[in-house]
Image (tube, rainbow, N blue to C red):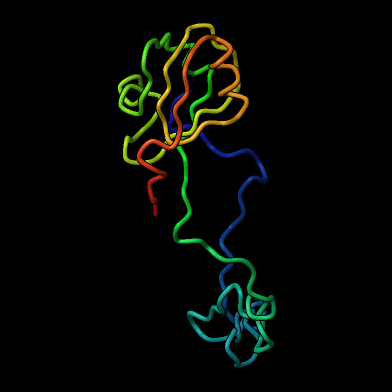
Length: 154
């Protein structure tokens, strides 16, 4: 078998339809386009969302909600993430960044309580959940939240 000998299976391809080749062809004169009108013209396309002049759907529906420009988005770190990196001592956003648990020290960090922790950690971040704080204190650690305030993020 060679590339030059390959051919498609029987019936897989069809011949190109030659339009406008006389009345006997079945596609003569108007070539399947009908008479005049926008759809008969070359390059005739309407926008996919055009509804023939009736009020478009996106204008019929009411406006809903609002985007808060002052929304604070936290970088999430769970207790099992801290345990997997075997971090100890004081945990700050800088330490989390060097461990690869957060992307930036400029955005606020929140510690959540998924997983367990055994090492006593001193955690200083912008926010912490009640469940996470409870587990850290139970392990003999310390918690300090809202350091430097929650940074404004856009």
